[in-house]
Each structure stands twice: as structure tokens, then as C-alpha cells.
Length: 267
Image 1 (cartoon, rainbow, N blue to C red):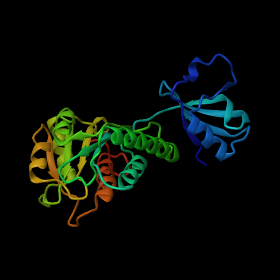
Image 2: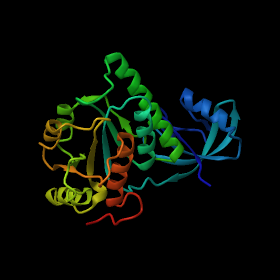
Image 3: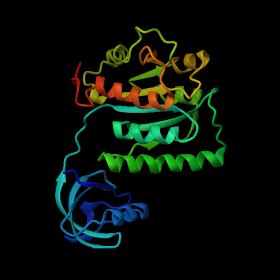
């Protein structure tokens, strides 16, 4: 059975002098631990502030306060490339759903993108509130799915800012419904790996760009593909909703790179 999973933001377990010590959980995680009704003798997995991974045995529980001891240090194995999802800001709860499900799939970072066809317009105050919410959702999804890292959720960017930020990526895949059927994710990744002379796809840093409800304009696609190793790609013959494409596209990238246990990791 999988262990309940927690992240420690300001505690390094290797620095703990006592065999039994309190786990310094965040306020939200303390509430979550209380809801789980964790008890002495149970084990949990913990990633601490140094990004070390441990299995801990609970010794004592009082409310949401947990005292524990280290059972064993675990390995954090790299299983796939760093996939960055640039998601056109969508309305309602669609962004919440994309971040939640794409975190479960294995996305390493998110960049919300403001484009010409976005229905949602965020001022500075709204943007700060939304980003805080998206970060909380990413952390919750990482805990639920047993991920060893919490994906970073960046501040919203314009199309031009995104193009500049991704200039160092192994490749940038811009999902566009007007793209030729021959421009596939697999071919674009292979081309990017070859141009970077990179043998192991697990070392790659691949960005996937998905437009909002109205898609991307031709001018925006031109900007996003103006950088090195940046190409438009197709997701197949059907047009996907933005909240569907935001999960399917990074999943396909991870599959191609061996990050979902399907294809080999080396070219």
C-alpha cells in the first residue's frame, strides 16, 4: 500500500539531533494529517527542505502534530524529462483542473500565459490570488499522487515573455490545431534531441504550449516558434478542449521520453 506523502518546507531531517522529532508540517498539512487520522505505528513518506526523501514511522500524534523517527532514506530516481506546461489562461475552474491533473501526470512546472484570445483577464491583485491558488492545487495533487517534487507555478506571462523564457529549452512544442498532420510530437522531440546532441531523453527540458479556449492566433504561433528548437505540433485529427489538451500533450511528451513507463528513455 502506498504511504501518505508530505512535503516539509523548512525542515531538514538530517539536521535533527534526536531520534524522535516533530514533523514541522504547514498549517494546511497539519489539518490534512488530522483528517487522515494518522496513528502511532503508521509510516509516511516525507520530502524535506533539502529535497531528501525519507520513510518515517509515526511515534506520537496529538491533533495534527506528529512526532516521528526516520525508518529509512529512500532514493529519488529520475524517471523522465522536465516537462514545462505553458497553459493559456482558461476561464472558471479549467485552470484548476489542468494544474491538478497535469501534476498527477508528471509536469515539472507551469507557466500561465495571457494571449489575445484569453477570456480571462487578470489584474495584478487577481493574478496573485490565482497563482497562490494554483500553487496550493499543485502541492495537493503532488501529495495525493505521491510525487517527490511539487511543480513550480510561475507568474502569468505574455506570449513574447514566454518565447524569451523558453529560449534555452531542449525543444518547444506549440500545440496548434492548424498544424499539418505530419508535424508530430515524436518527430519534434527527436529533432530537438538531435540538435542538442543529447542522448538521454530523461535529461531533456521540454516545453509544451497550449492555447486558451479560442486557441492561438497565427501571429502568436510565429512568436512562440521564433526561438531555437521551437515548432508547431499536432495533437491528432480532432480538436481538443484547452483543459483536455493541457493534460494530453504533456502526457504524450512523457510517454515519448519514457517518463510514463512505456517507451525507452534513450534514442
